[in-house]
Length: 97
Image (cartoon, rainbow, N blue to C red; front, side, top):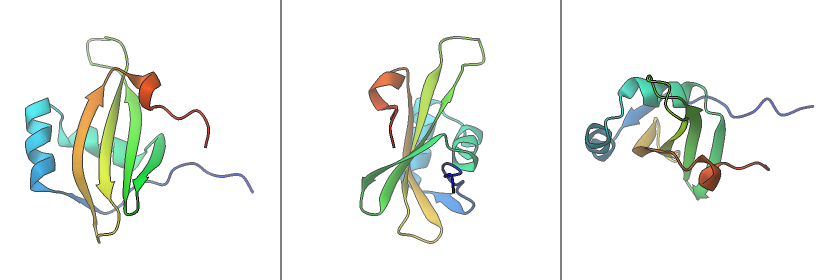
C-alpha cells in the first residue's frame, strides 16, 4: 500500500512565542493554517517535535519560499512553537524519505 503523504494537523494551538514570532516576521495565521492543513513534508526534529513545511509563492510573484512550522506533537492539541519563512528551499527540502 502506497503512503498517502503527510497527514494534516486537525487540532493545534499557537503558543505565545509563536504569535510573537509570526507578528515579527509578518507571517499570518492563515499561512500557518495552510501549511498545517496540507503540509508537503513533515520532518522529525527530535522526539516530540516536528517541522511541517510547504513551498509557497509570494503574492507579488516573487521567487518561491518555504514556510516552516515547528510543532510539539506531544501535547493535545499539538502546539505550534515557532514559524518562519525562508528562500533557502534547497537547504531544508528533503528529497528522500
